[in-house]
Image (cartoon, rainbow, N blue to C red; front, side, top):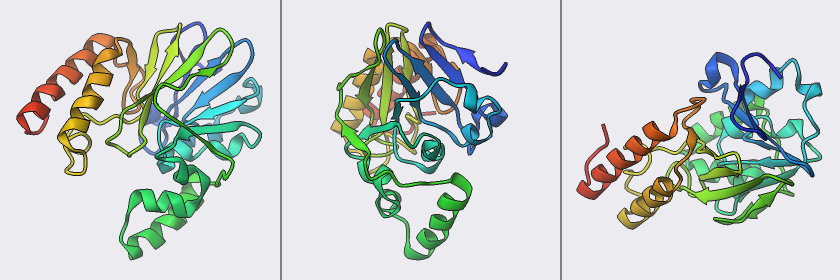
Length: 234
């Protein structure tokens, strides 16, 4: 492990990326059980870690969603099983599927395809498998339970790690860019907030190493008030 890494629990360590994990670097979470080891969101920074060869063998790569910075380290674990919500599965399986998730205009798509492969080392995993909300990944003595939090993408999912009490929220967006976009309807916004509110844990939110459960709860409550009113969170 590096000095910048952050131990979050007996089985869980945040592998902090370059520049504190700010885009495009990203942070990654390592979860070690007695039977298997998982990496959540292998980031762009994983490609330059000096201790990559010293990490335990990775059996599972678990993705919060299909975006370039969260897929950038998948190619480092060719023997690992890839897990992602079924609504984002196409983005892990092929570059064409990933571009469909972005939904860009043709000219922008052509340019971004090159960036994803060149700068983010995208490698398709046609063997990736889709999970659904609540389906548990058991590593032996520690589990990862997906909590579907759509908005940032259709399949965006938080990962609840127990018994460590860590909730990895990926890029959950409680702002106008996420929950209040027109394509996320009011009932779905409220369902996402209810799921987020139900998780009273320390959080990794939008590449911030540790937001803390109190601040997390305040953010959810504030956004819930805005969604009910139909306006924009501050």
